[in-house]
Image 1 (cartoon, rainbow, N blue to C red):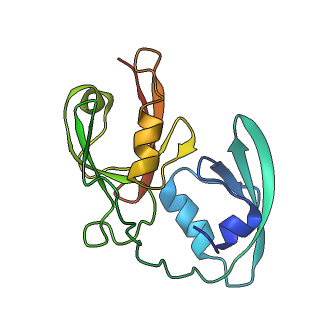
Image 2 (image 1 turned 45 degrees about the vertical axis):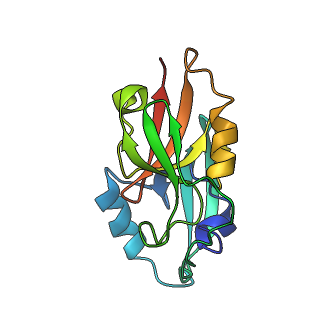
Length: 166
């Protein structure tokens, strides 16, 4: 999220954190236990994998900023049907915590077979960010279903990558 210690340290959404101050953890609970032991202003190192290479970044803890409500832009398509899915713009009443991406209202066909679910938020296509319906429609027209493509999805607040190939 913008303005967070993670952003200040240079972390990216696809980074995989493997150690905190040299300490390994097994799962999200172990990660949270170590992170929750840190106080505001503490400094620590994260070891992560980024694009297959190991990196270390220094993080200084701080307060997490409030997330502003999404701003709807005028003249966005209200719905877009794509590969068996009904895609709609993000609506503050449905997804108040997300500012960018598009909402999967209903899904069948190739996207359902690949693992996309209704309620997912598509944040990117082939490592290109989806900001709104217009950007999603442009990106969706560039994919080659036969060769396959990657969807960056947020599901119930958790990042998920899904490869789609037909």
